[in-house]
Each structure stands twice: as structure tokens, then as C-alpha cells.
Length: 116
Length: 112
Image (cartoon, rainbow over all chains, first blue to last red; front, side, top):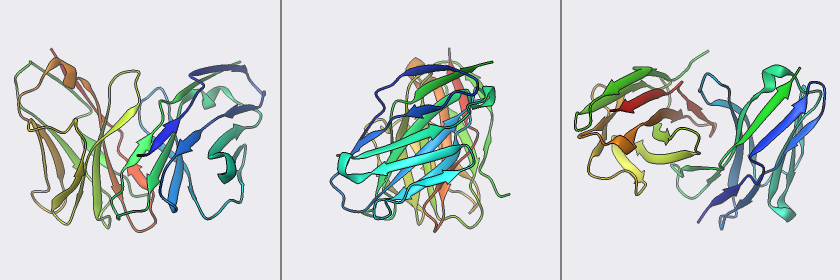
């Protein structure tokens, strides 16, 4: 069974602070994919990143960075110099590779509030 | 940029009524999904669809639910007799060869 745990439920920061959103996952698959999605107040799910289990390189995209640590089954997301527009719910998700249609399993999400 | 589109954006219905939610996936994608999100909760998998048949479904997807792709472009979710607990945001998603799921903006269903 697959499981994604986002232990933080709500985080509030002041603009320009850095913030890290934690994600821990469980899977029996040896090959799998990890994702982060952003859900702004408007409700849609916005794809942020996909990481393959065989690629442990960390990734940086502008103010966003992701730290994938297979040894601790974690895929943490850091926003540097946060902005008010970063306020949203952030979901970490996991998909196995067994079968082309393996479903996405989501964590419960972290509500991030960035105050001016 | 290609996107998944969903209609309606919001539907209000009476308990016991049938509801059809529509989705137009990204045109060259072959894998289609429905997820739902009860207000304030996590996104839950309902069903996946490939090659004109259901490939996986969750325990939520009971006999009241059905999906079809009637015309090669639309992908629909039907709830036969809605219950109060069906009130949620329903997300359609499609996946191509790159592996990312692209979600639509969601259809909010309110059952009264």
C-alpha cells in the first residue's frame, strides 16, 4: 500500500521568510514517482514537480527547491523568500510504476499562509 | 498551452438526482482519471480509465458511479442517485507519456 504523510497541517510565515513543507512517503514499489501540487484559493490543482525514484538529484526552480532523500523516504519542498501569492494548500503525492495507470496517492495537504 | 477542461464549474442538485460531470482531457493523452476532494480534505482517487475501460477504481467508486468516453473526446463521470456525502470538488485528470497528471480546474458539486 502507498501512503503519503504531510505532518504539518498549517504553516504561517511572514513574506520573505523561507519555508519548508515536509513530505514522507511509503511504498513497496522500487520505481515510483513523487509529485508536488499547489491548490490556490481558486481551487484548481497546479502541477509543480515530478521526481523519479531513481533520480535523487535535488532540483531548484526559481524560488522553489525540492530535497529528495530516498534514505529517509522524504521529498521536502522549500520556498525561498516567500510571497503572498504562495498562499495555498500544497499537496505531496506518490505514484507507483507498476502498471501504466497507477493512481496518485495524495497527502492531506499543508495550508501555507504568507502574511505581508 | 493544452489543458484539461471541466464542465460545469459548479452544480447544485437535489439528493437522489443524477449528475453528469464532463471533462475534455488533453488531446493526445491516453490515461484519464477522476478524483474528488471533500471540502477541506485531501484529494482522493476515484477511478482510472484507459483504452475505453476502467483500469482501477477505489472503494468510493461504487455502483452509483460510472464513467464513459462517449465520443473520443469527452470523459464523463455520472453519479446515478446523488447523496449528501457526494458533495465535493471533482477533478478530472489526464496523463500522457511524460507521466505527469494534468488536472482540470474541478467541478464543485453541492447536493442539497
